[in-house]
Length: 203
Image (cartoon, rainbow, N blue to C red; front, side, top):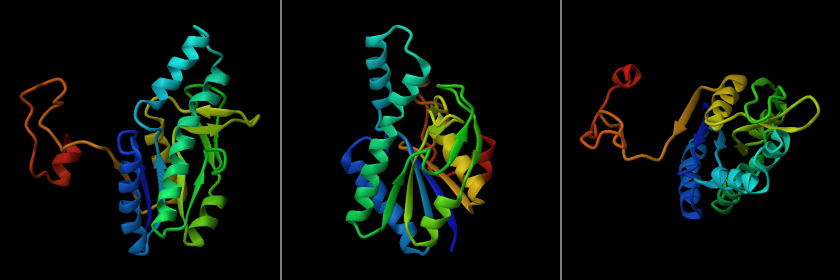
């Protein structure tokens, strides 16, 4: 039995159907006896939508209020994934960055993680639950919600894995596969059918 931290990005969480697919994937790991923590991003495009709303109100939104606002995207997806897991027979709890004790500095919109209190997570894991954690967010000394900046959900996943001394941190991304170069930049990029761990690491 291993402790696994999995991170799923916005495209993987982009629709209710995709969220159900993630739930089924998580269930397979849980059914094999592993303890699983899942870190998720907001639905694809949601953070940009929220940022656009803020800009429609103010050309220079207050950073504290901006963090309060954009952090809600992940709160939607953690609840949806927890609901999906519970609906297929896996006991799951959704938790915000604050609820899992991700303490940061007060650099709103680009906060850095200072510490993580693992007690709440350990309690749920020991009870056999899957924990679904909002990526990209934490809280500061004064209890304000903070966000970690773009790519912050990956940061959350790796930081939680380190704090929990997880056996693995798996970062999933919704793509066709590994290409010889970025297919969005080079139209002649070719998909690689097979790649060794060493080759992938080198790339």
